[in-house]
Length: 196
Image 1 (cartoon, helix red, strand yellow):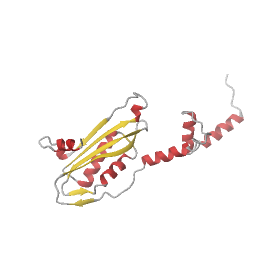
Image 2: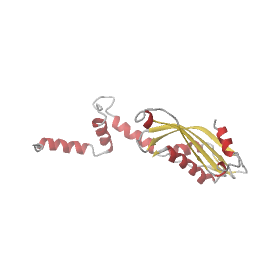
Image 3: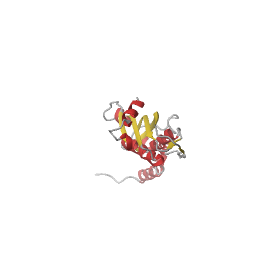
């Protein structure tokens, strides 16, 4: 037969419960009780606060103005090898890699630095690689109204490489619109050749 907890045990539980009522306290609880981390070590005592700060940085999109220019240009623009990092919404673990973006202008072009900024902004947060690829393509469509957009993302997922299957590999996703979908034209082949 189980005994009723002593008033001392109840007081300790109440104290511990109150201590873990803020975000850093919740992280401290997880690190202590799930990961078994010694939070009395001088190197790890600030780890809960660092974790919260890092998570905030990885999920907060940097605001910027997507500058465009009206031009008399009808050509393909490609920006390749854009590094990105995002968090998998299934395991809250990072996936990182490169993004390649192409679009065929229709009288409007983007400031060239805006493409990597857009990728970084979309990558901030929790998503899947498939959703992220579509999100970037849709954002470019919205800002530029081009003849077509192509986005290819290649990433390694730590949710697969350090847990579960414990196997590394590169996942490739592609989102294409407009002329890139038209098989009677060569836009898709030119883009894929351009990012090789």
